[in-house]
Length: 272
Image (tube, rainbow, N blue to C red; front, side, top):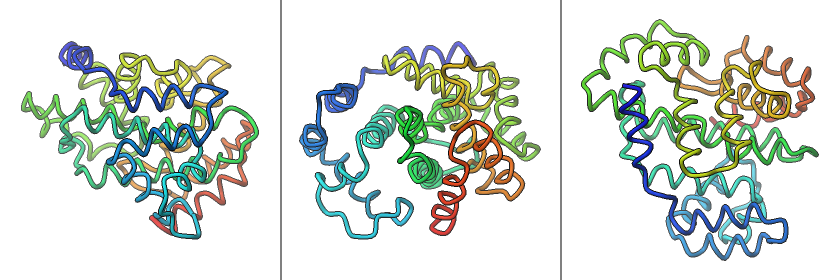
């Protein structure tokens, strides 16, 4: 199974031109939000997705957003980069998440809530954590698309799905995936982004997001932040009380704006 998944990832087409251009602009210190908006406007589907999200209560904007310029200015480069990558993944795979007891609408809801939580929590952070965590938070579940597709095609989806009922959290799920498939969904996501030559910091942060204690010091903070996001919002449910207490403590202990996390949870939880 591991070999089949690896081959599927290696056969992926390159990112489309608009996504590559968005990546280039977001990584160029001399580029502006206006430059970014011009590229976004050339992609009707991405434009529609961004405007739809900008008007979702999950992101907390008080007024209706009707222009790309306004949406790009409100979201910023890191978030728009996440939107573009999320759209690129959806365009690259046939989405069937039945192996995870999930339909495409639930997958989209989880990804959007994870991203909204990261934005409401870290958008005003003074350090570089937000530059990695905000776009990565939109992409944490991507590996599940590949895994589920492979399980469905090999008629193993039902067997895999039956084992999910015994699991309670993302750590147990990751261990189960490794036992069943030989790799976790976080590892699969990292392989996809490595294939597309995305930033190493993002790849590594996602790779270690379930076990941030194993990450090197230079990426540990990013991995911990993603671990918090995925523990609070995942296929098992949203905002478990015991988990919220632990995640806020983890945030405070690692310089990750614990009080802001509490505020972000309130915003996303009330609009979930």
